[in-house]
Image (cartoon, rainbow, N blue to C red):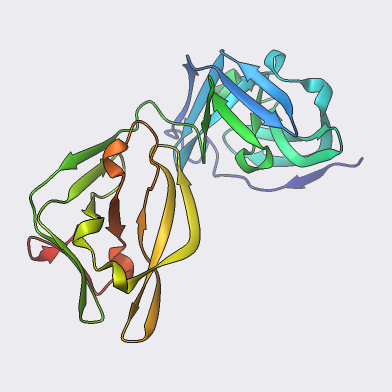
Amino acid sequence: MSGTISDARSPGWADNPDHGLGFDPSPRRVRVRFNGEIVADSDRMRLMREDGSYIPVYYFPRDDVRMDLLSKSGHTTLCGYKGVASHFDIEAGEKTGADAAWSYESPPAQAAAIAGYIGFHWDSVDHWYEEEDEIFACPRDPNHRVDVVNASRRVEAILGGDKLAETTRPRVVYETGLPPRFYVAQEDISMDLLEPSDTRTRCPYKGEAVYWSARVAGKLHEDVAWSYPDPIAECPKLKGYFCFNKERMDGVLVDGKPAP
């Protein structure tokens, strides 16, 4: 197959010599499953953190990857910091994952440590595990914190002149790199104004979020709030609480002032 190159090139070391590219050992055992097969299984992981990318990436040593299930697709991409990435298809049983994995086989000197490692596109495989726990959305960065704190501040959520929620017992989520979010107990919300939405998102640090729309004065305002009905074990204090999206509300007030 003839190769194709997608020029996804970032500026490169010559343009930005201070570009941060972390490639740190991770003590976690991580596994990838595709169509019933364990495609990669390693306790010698590396976690890449890169300037300009909020999401960390797991890399597997090549020896811990089922290379018999991978074949080069002929597709390559170019990064000014990491070099040319060769992409691989995964074939297991009747299923093929096109360009599901990649490897920088001849990286520049500044990124030499990444040679011999394989990365997988998160959504191109079926399941990810840390030990026996399935993980979602992206790797959990050990430097990322989520603290859920009980508070006594007055929180109000207002939309279309109606007050959807009011409480003096919110819970505040302080999460690395994000503004604080104020969560309201279901008992302090006018649930008759809310309707469940089909929208779902997953957070590796909190779990699966379900979304809620509000019907005010006959008008439906979509996805104005979310909640975690079954948060992961590390965030039990989120269960039964809702967060209103201030970007979709007329106002989310904290002690009478706009939420940060």
